[in-house]
Image (tube, rainbow over all chains, first blue to last red; front, side, top):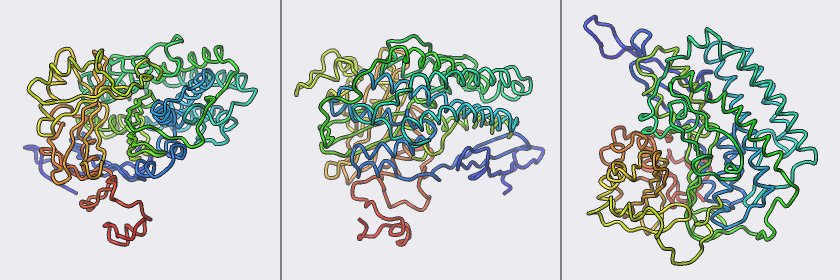
Length: 374
Length: 179
């Protein structure tokens, strides 16, 4: 337990184990902290507890079966994960996605982003030490979104609703009015969080100036999502390489310049407003029509080739690298996890801070260990 | 993705209008070849020159590939293992895929951690999954796999997809009856 002496005063650094099963680690994540009193000197993260070999399993299964593994990889934003995967397959197979399917996809991924950010707000509240209130508030609105997804797909988390080429089936007839209901609830939820946390003195004291990372470092570590946008880098795949219909509607990329934990929180909060805006515009543009291409092959095959498709998931860039040698299954499928790259910067962001702050820095990355380990 | 180049299904794709001309200039002195991928240009670089090439791509003023999106490998069985780098420029906003093909009897390549810190964990994962050795890696431990799993490379094509009991029954090695 006790290691080298660190200074002339003969204080000794202590190795402190956190996790793998600890509420602050958001899943099964373990880190060994070398602490000098309350100050973190070094962090050694250990991951892999949730490794299930999804990439290998996808190589042995039909393209449509792979969708389920994407849900289980990124279970808090399963729609976004499915989107990258089906886009990789359909681009390689040269399938044209009908307009209606694209608008519905966009509504679903943005709603999923809202659900995921709500989850962050709740869990982060706990990390900071306000147990209870924000968590339950977050659950209330997230539940509305999950209920809607259940009505559409039949499942609360593992939707498997997107298909290469379009959607599994059309949305229920009351879809538009239901989405509007959910948006009303979510808008109220965002306002509640704004009131509860944003100007909360204790919350600000705990998060401002903590875990700062500069823009250059964030780029070098390959960070993405709100974690890099909070450092002033306007990196958003939706804007830089628009997919679906992101080019046809009005929305803003949210950035902050401070690069600290508070900025990452504010980024997510403002992004939720943008997501609501996006969904509202999508609802206005949604027209009846087909949800799958007219000529869908019974067995989905791709020509030989490779593609790296990236989309903006709530936690950052969710990439799918698909190598095909022809046939109905991938030769290689790699999932680029946003959290893995963001987590790499944890040590950089927390060394020199207090132990309690390191926990908040970890929370501010909003990790999903299932996505990190795959 | 509905941009024009994705619909281009002509068999011999030209590299006109892509960033290949710029890349070729930045990689002067390195024998690189290019092909057109579905979305991004794919550049093949000899493994011995990979770090020189990546550094050139990163430091070139117009290309400025400062962001490593992803780093992984593909097992092509008899044709060796490809190490694949997906690069992006946050300023110039363009993409590039870089590939280095390693022969099966020489799975060594220099580490890219000196170019981007992002490569650290990605290389650790590639090493344990494919048995690629990254020379000069600062932290060559396993990432997702147990520490004692050093001769088993799960993402290789010759690794069976077997029941957990089969794998663990052989003390983390894998039995031939698997699959």
